[in-house]
Image (cartoon, rainbow, N blue to C red):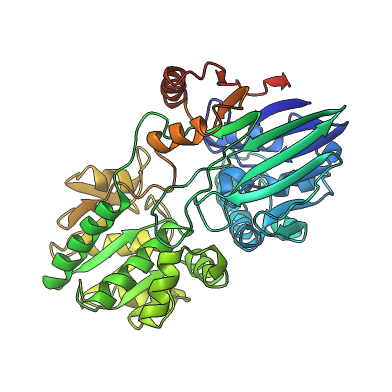
Amino acid sequence: MRINFHGAAHTVTGSQHLLEINGKKLLLDCGMYQGKRAEAYARNVNFHYDPQGVDAVILSHAHIDHAGNLPNLVKQGYEGNIFVTHATKDIASTMLADSGHIQESDAEYVNKKRAQRGEEPVEPLYTKADAEEVAGMFTGVDYVEAFEPIPGVVARFYEAGHILGSAGVSLQIEEKGRKIHLWFSGDIGRFNLPLLRDPVLPTHADYMIMECTYGDKSHNDPALAFDEFRKAVKRTIERSGKVIVPAFAVGRTQEIVYHLNQMMYEGDVPRVPVYVDSPLAVKASDIFKNHLECFDDETKEFVRDSRHPALDFPMLNYVRSVDESKALNERTDPMVIISASGMAETGRVVHHIRNNVENPRNTICIVSWQAPETLGRRLADREPEVRIFGDIYKRNCEVVTIGGLSGHAGQDLLVKYATGVKASVKDIYLVHGEEKQAMTLKELLKGQGMDRVHYPDMHDSVDI
């Protein structure tokens, strides 16, 4: 048996791990590498294996850095099944179609610039139609249900608690008389996050491929983060302002909606209109509502006691048209607007920020990590002026940064996850993390008596 690390090795994005077992090839994830445009395009188009030679794919969850390159895999000849949980099937179908639309739009924009310079046009990485073809290849499987992706491998999905439908993957492998248990973590979630069930931790594995995104730090309690959010919403409403929340469409938006539901039901904040203004977030929220089996007991209890759904309540409005979105900027009454993108770089949220950033009554809540040079990062850094659509605006509004809401396990849970298999594991391979985070976690595990922890390079292969 051989493991080939073709993505998310020495980096966070582009998860792709190709297993060779019994003469067959099984691919774990097929994520999009995200980075500088030219490098990302080259990495995503050029596979280090023949897509036609892959026999099956198992997808841990729908995030683009794990699922986003599936359309290319299929364009280049893959014809097999893509095994997913039922919720991932729905979420990934929506996210890939959205990604395909973005690829086409980006290519159209770039080609206008290239035409002005007399250069040849570029092709989009893939199209919406390519993404829709992938959706027809998904095979939905229940959590814990056994399935056989290739001969000699019995696989099962276990709750990962990261996003709706996310899973760790257990592979019971029989090859040449040997029995091996391989565990692939996917992205590990956190305990006590809203809506979703807690991650299932492995208790036995011979080998493990494990993410290490936050191997260098632990997170604050999410309950403290949402208390900080509640206070920000309350004081903004009391001064008749608007709360603008740039939020990722899948996961973070739904968490915030659920907590606003709770806060208004309990009377912790005044009841004002709440708007979810992002086409993808609206679609994702509809999918969440169709997969109540993924919700945790606390959410189910709240739904039962309050007698209305977790992601629907009287003050909540899902904005479905551009005209509805534009109309919000004409209003001056207090409200909460949750809109994508999460780093405030594209989408409708940029218009909401432009229209509200100079009003001291308003608040912009930053609820996730912001990459350098993004509008979200400049706001989080409290820069006195920000450039939006080429114009300079004074930042007179309040800015609140809410830490502790990450959907990834922090260092403490990563250690617990790994040491759960200490008695059985032979080797652990750290992926989906930068070198500093991986080395910090590796040293911590070494202190726990776990010496065989590796950090493979891109395209490394190991025989087990």
